[in-house]
Length: 151
Image (cartoon, rainbow, N blue to C red; front, top):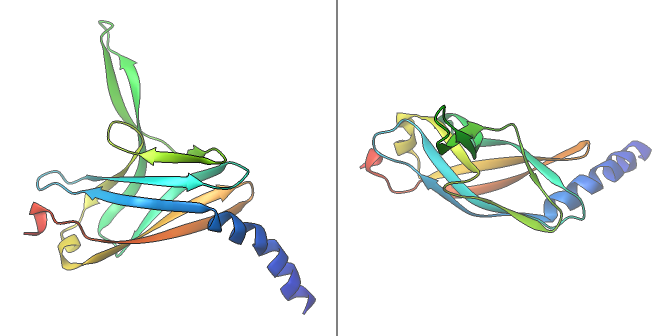
């Protein structure tokens, strides 16, 4: 019985952390030609401490992988500025703030869209977070967006 209480007390911070994180407005961009797509979403952190988004998983298995991406300013050899898209390992969300994954900024890259995408009506996204040593997840289920690839 004591072991159950220890487990419960260890899980309480994780449960509270996940209750205060809201993942909203998930939108996918699936194009006809390219093998990759993009995902846009807003994530609110209602905790009093920072959290870190470090991974996104999707079921069913319709993408080779989902990567976290950002655009960063660069200069070419002539000094001309441009934006480069890069993969990043994680995204921190400050307490009481919202992270917007959107076009031209931080976003999800849906790498290697598989033909099986067209056979499903719904996708389940699991957003994996860390808060200190604890980790938790938020699940979002969305309809497969209408796209020319599946017509």
